[in-house]
Length: 146
Image 1: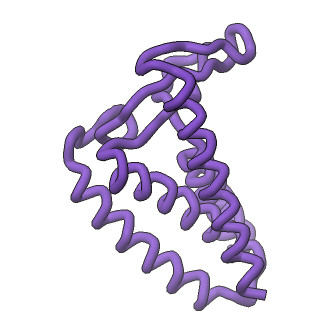
Image 2 (image 1 turned 90 degrees about the vertical axis):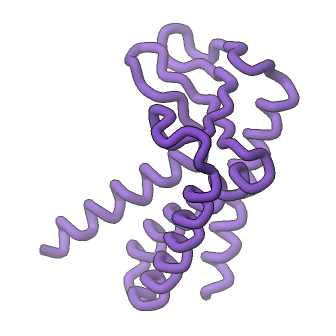
């Protein structure tokens, strides 16, 4: 059974990296490719910080924090293994964290590409989507249990 979650995490990270590589090879930095008019575009951005470029240029700090987070999340997934919803939410969090760590280690920045055209919101990537899904699912589970 644990192998299924390892495969799930691996597939999520693979999708994240494939999308990022496609963007790098097909779009110049700042180039915009509309997907759904007025809703979402693909815009290549190299982000050396966190959301809204917070702490720009501090890749080493983000890598260390990310690695610590993955270790803690693995501890939680082992501890809470009996609950499949915890396993799923924590798997999304691990995959999202690993996807951005890989970028920071090998590119010295995170490759972002999804731009919401209808709102002023930071450009994000698949790993960020996984992190959001993981946090929302985890919050729902915790609220539901109380």
